[in-house]
Image 1 (cartoon, rainbow, N blue to C red):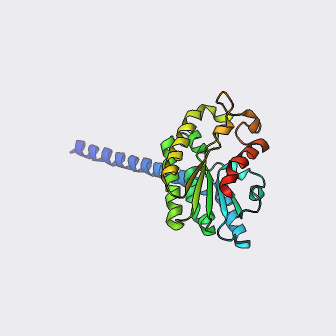
Image 2 (tube, helix red, strand yellow):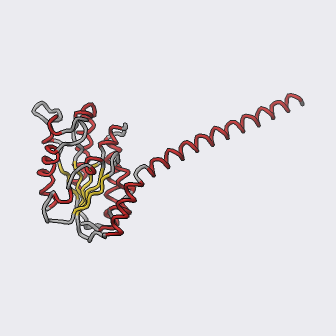
Image 3 (tube, helix red, strand yellow):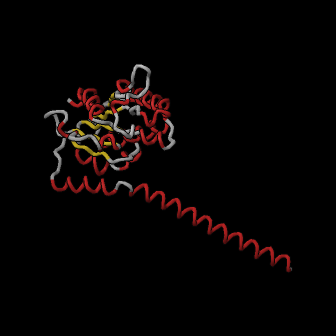
Amino acid sequence: MPRLICSLIGLAALLVWNSEVGAQTLAGTSTAALTQDTQWESSIAAFTAADRKHAPPPGGVVFIGSSSIRLWSDLESQFGNTAIILKRGFGGARMADCTRYLDRVVLPYKPRLILVYAGDNDLAEGKQPQDVLEHFTKFVERIHQALPATRIAFISIKPSPARVSWLANIRETNELIRQFAAAGENLDFIDVFTPMLNSAGYPRDELFLADALHLNSAGYALWKSVIGPHVR
């Protein structure tokens, strides 16, 4: 009997310990998920507040994505008077983040064209090319469920000196999405990757700021020349 009692006490203690560890794990997971969901809330809230003051007319062009979109000065006026252009970039965004906020900063505008730049940060955080393709596929599906006639253009992931070690993954991701776009409807793939390489096949330093990651004015001028024909 004493042995049985000791065994029962030990089992009870083990169950209590497991429940505490499980609770801590769930709490940590919930905190991480909450942080991810609220990381860009201030940026998204600013966009929606601006929309309430001046509602964009339908049929325009939306640029959405990471800091390469956010830092593009005067993007809204870069392509003349051919379209109403909305800039919806939030720094550090990944492909899945662009999908998460579609209902708030893309779909309400009923745009005729959506250009997305994302995937750069995904790869830098350890995601694989197939992961980026899967997230882009979900992005496309969500949009075309609501707006089947809207055209979607993926701006290829750029090669940057700061992330030259990911060059092979960037190439693979771009090729996967190029093939996906070629096989789909109302999809485009815009290749800014190739003209940003030098003759040796490495990123052109003169297109970047001192951080070797973000574009300078020359880099954005190149983007404008490549993207322009798709906006008109």
